Length: 619
Image (tube, rainbow, N blue to C red; front, side, top):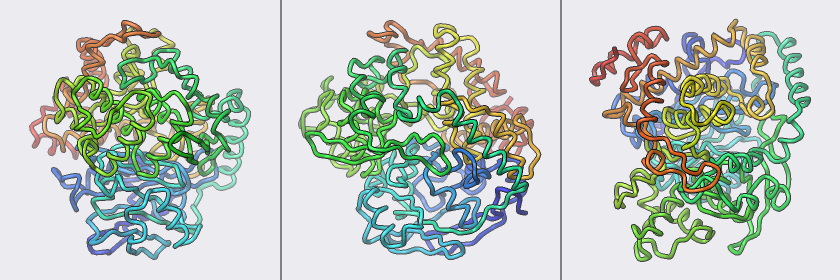
């Protein structure tokens, strides 16, 4: 079956044998899971044998655009990637912009499924119907940015390339995928799975057209969508700064990660905010496919360690490689950003690991002899040293490369208290001791401590930050809306940042696909995906449930010491209250497992036997 927006087939590649085949994109898969994140979740459930190790031939990587990817409309350049995460052992995925995702569609595919392990370092080249492995000898060991440049020179500029750096090759559990010289699928360690599989890069070229159910109507609606974006009051104000615009606001409300999340207000924020970026390092705006509001900022920065050119820094990098390690100059954050990009390290987890190590050093839990040098807050050389050691898995870097949860177990000395993570994934850029809706969003995010499923902190500020009631309800609402963009293959920033109305997406979806679906129907699909990813983690992880949803002890036991949020803390009892309310509203058990009635209601009855076999009580 070929509907509008779909290419009608999924490519399966076995790296062990080098063989590939295509299978039809099933009507049930399309109807029940839409695309992108939905395809990732269902294919992982179906194709990863229960109990598979993340670093094994049976673990797969799924790369999936959505039905609206590559189509003329705002923000239609997103791709979703997923695997069983080496960082958490749970369901893992990450999202990336640029031009890679549309190229997959133009090559003729709705998804790519990769299994096995190449016998030697390799690149996967997909040139429409030609699918082959080539040796990666000239790029294996090279940085991600350097390798992409070499592969463009080898294959041609018209190939779109996703690639790992040394961190992925060395199996750092938060290694990322890089594309377009600065876009990343950063979270959950998918780059490490590529590295274990000896896969340096996936290179795609295509020239096919995407079928559209109602081309004239879809084109007219898309033009209207662009015009609406350009006419929004926030358009001109937001675009020059991109995501860095929010630095001042997050700091003002006392939620900015500072010195390994020990504080929530950074006194040096004016040196790393959006204005500093624009005034001191930005060269030009850079956008993804179809983007009317380019958030990318290509920058040039000079520091005592040298000069770099880099895409960024965006907000999350500023938060975690800026305030969280107390770097107060945008040039230094940009330099650390460039180092991480070349190494192929997620800047969120990398910044967390660096902040954690510095705090351990300052508290005497790590010595100069163990680390190899003195570490200090606000010291660029300390941060760069740690990033490089992590990517190479040398010395202290070998401990930090497994993530702060695992590192704290090895270092001991109560460092677990300030290992800032959930489910083994490091916390992103919003401290939540005075933001209960944001806190429950982090706690219950299916991949671990990540903000992109539910950016609820604005709701906390608007409705009262000391009040717990209704906060779980808002988190669930956003956990259905925001991940739906990942299923459709779209960027959500037009909606989030300039107030572009959600109704537009409900109107354009049937015009592209020919599938009559209301926004409520699509949200129901998103709820189905959310429950399936939770079920996947319950299937894969012993004892999964409530205990895996708690935030770090720092957030439950240490009141914020100073700044706008001074004295604020969310106790374990308050976190339990939020979890109880959340689980009840979701139709889950009090241990956080999707209930049998909810699973049946969502058409997920097929997961019940596996969860029952694992010993979960679903009533």
